Image 1 (cartoon, rainbow, N blue to C red):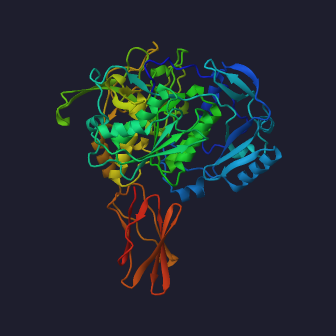
Image 2: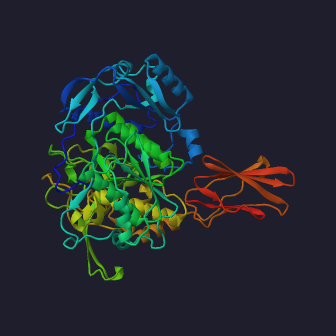
Length: 639
């Protein structure tokens, strides 16, 4: 995550605990325990805003309802089961909201004089809008305004929202009753001149970490999530031009009316530039889609939903450089967001998040240990930070590299520690994650991996028409997102959820054994052999990681199904490499007559003479029809 060094310390987050009282219907005992942990965090949230008064009755308010899926995903990282990747069509069949739930919400909205702005069963999202008075009555609460010392105002419910008994079991969360600013960028600027600093180019860091040189992310899409600020295209063009790199394709997506707004502030603009320039330089062939969303929980959840279900852009990686301590999140929203992040993993999207820039306290001044969210989600690849010093850099083979935990001794250091919200996932069982130092809770360890983040050894960037050097764990997060994109390209498939696999590849990491992330005199945490709460498994040797993924891939092509059904179902199985091609071979008298694209599939119709004899459904998210001519239809991997 990133923040300018000259900027003030993180402002106190203004939090109101707004937790719904409706019941949860969790699918497993492990999830019951996890939700209980999140609920217990409510007592730690304090409202320190200044009350202004009720929200005007006629002021329009938008609320997002996140519904429960119609069935359990059948996967639970807490219990050690593998996450099965689903296509969009399969996801819709297994994880969408039920028609009955949508009908109940329609009736609820009509009865309470609320408009339905969106009702999407695949996203499990219903957006309601109406006057503040109607919203308050609908959820049996009132909306009041609060002001911050900055002059900014937000609204919050004065009591937990309530739902009718018949509707509560279908709803996972009500988001939008609290619009307090929440997320902070993890961006830090080095004010030394380019010649004075020990900064490196992004491409140099990628080489030091042994990124595959014959891959640039081509064919992959990286979604970059931003919650403020913006970029000027002239800066981006100048940055890549000066490095003799083509400017990557950048698409802007607005979420909840947020926009690319350069000039909003040095921190937030620096964050946006750092994310784009690092991801674009480290995976120069990838498409970049930048999502701009409001800085609140509703904006956060909506941005993830929009990204993972974007059928035009279809991102394979999402990069987060923003976050906040777990205790600053509404417990209900934390639970719902984790469910959405699980959806991302199920759809084969790797989510990467920065672990924070204020050490084991995560910027809170209560003399306690905290970790950052979304990095602490067990469905996210959490990235910590190091100080990377490269000497004698004549060429990569002669570089002498030393690396330690990033901690400047002045309050800035890599985030990391043990979650109080999420139980230790099964993939960390052998990692010797310690219990929480105060609570004794066996929580999820943060981070999983690490990368160069120290502003003193950071990345050369361009923002606001000026060249500079920046760092923070928000530099390490897009670097890892770019690595995932390049690995996807090399493997010819989406890695998707990678945490469980990476924890079996300890030899593919450079372990960081020196330093600590204690910035508040708390006495923890220190680096050490193996996984540690500062840098996780360590920094990557990407070549070894690639070889590990290659050798674990299956080399057995799928068998054709029974042809008597009248069609062939060609499904990509986890682990197949690009050489494993499923061929639909036909005789000389059979010709390919057409291809019809249907959302997540390609339908190939085969005709013999004047009679259609078979159709071949090919999963569009994983396969691409390769040839329209000849006597056979050849389908190759798309990713």
